[in-house]
Length: 148
Ligand code: DQA
Image (tube, rainbow, N blue to C red; front, side, top):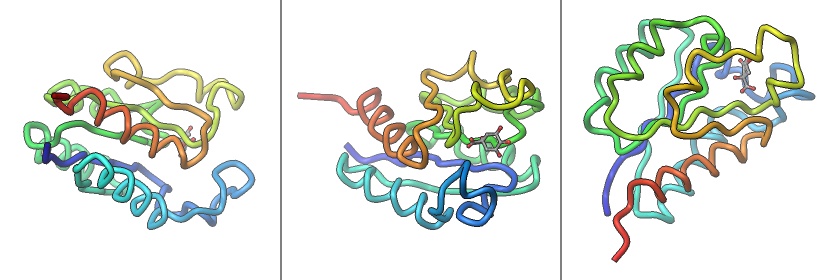
């Protein structure tokens, strides 16, 4: 089955590998996007990976991909904890949404414990490092691939 998974990364995730490596690890965003592409290929899927530090750019990407993507992997970074607008946009997508956080947000500051996205996500992967993105690809494949 062919299809494209949208992989959306929010603010500061362009600094992966540099920002707080003790929390987020040493892999870069390019590494993460390559990991997603490799994992997707195992399931005959492709990825369309976007990152922006501008909320409207990511919301526009959601609108652009909302009907064409088979599923969405979303690490909204700090917008997770603040953005009703991103939640409203993601509520319009047709495929499943997997929310990913590299760090265990529940073991961190209290303001990271609430997510505006979790209640509209099919699944949430937290604290598994960048491997969480690979898990999310496998989950979207499981949810969207028709087995024969
Ligand atoms: C994050 C957790 C957020 O609280 C934080 O603002 C980030 C990254 C994570 O992947 O662990 O930017 O989403």
